[in-house]
Image (cartoon, rainbow, N blue to C red; front, side, top):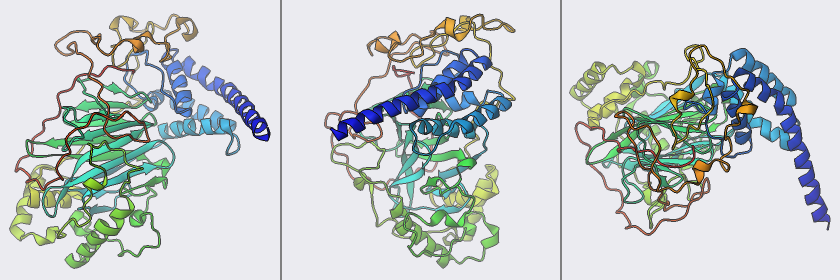
Length: 526
């Protein structure tokens, strides 16, 4: 009986606090709708959905923005005013309403904050958020970066390419609750698609793909960009040939989240030395040295022996701290495989450095890297890749994202669905200089997924795109369940498939070329 009374009290308290949150949120919603009746209403509803860890409403405007990207379109003065409202409304820690404000506060903070970058590229070389640079010749699956503030995590799978070199063969991400994976090499099944969403294949047809929980996937050239609804971003450059495939991965996070990250790319607190502490703070480690191999001219006196000692520590002790487990992995697996299947703690046989090359090898590799315009801070990694594996360099550009001072949002005549199935019709754009004729309450767009009739259509119905040479009519991709059931977003196990052979050492071709999968848009909710 006491438990029943306690449960009823908790439900009533949470309902009261939820009502308090809705009342407190009203001024923000009204301010956003005043800025733009259609886009602002969607942004307000998306913030509430994010705070409740629910799917965001369908877009009813032409842009393919995430909530973060749309928020950056709001004038900065308005954003600062709304952020002050948030800080005034936040209640003591542990309060139900306060927990809803937390993620909204993070979203506003990100819109006013600079981004910092970490990278894993080549065979592979890592550059932490705090610009610590090191080589990481290991085999297995690792946490590249994970946030304590939001649903943000990136994992990489490193597979051997010889006795001493490995490459990023796959990347897996938790994008605000959506599990996104890309398999450049070994796939978990025999399907053609390299890209997976919650275990199901996804193919892109030159358009942005909307994720249920507010993120997006974009494909341009050979680069995939995955953007979180809260603004974090991962760009992976696909390198593939008939023999093997790998990805170079660039991670963008926010400086205002300093110290809240874990993983191979460090904690982003501005201190390079502590990026190698790992989870076990008591473990003895060599004194950190950013070796001249990777462009740190102030430490060129570091001996080759000392460098190899540090590389051995990274590949053994440091690597063990950030290996994923069966409980934490984000990857899909074929029957009979697991994260342990992709693990080899004996790798590499020998730690090699740039100093192990002869002078001619170093000079030739440097000349090729300079001819390709490689920057000084990545010259060492380029020389290493060119000299040993003849891998061409990759300099991922800063991703294109909305910039308020350079982006002009057109006036919308009336709202219309813009999802993975529906293209926003051009006739719904008002003439230049026109204003929205009706407030959002009178326009009544369908902003609820369950109420949207398009979401109940069978997967066999063709997509309704405008058929043009640039945008051909495409049929929805087939939904195929994953082999691996993951705690982030579980899916049903697939039918058994042959157990793949243990990853073998694959010779690296002299001139890798790019052959990304041919995309077509998958049917589903936007």
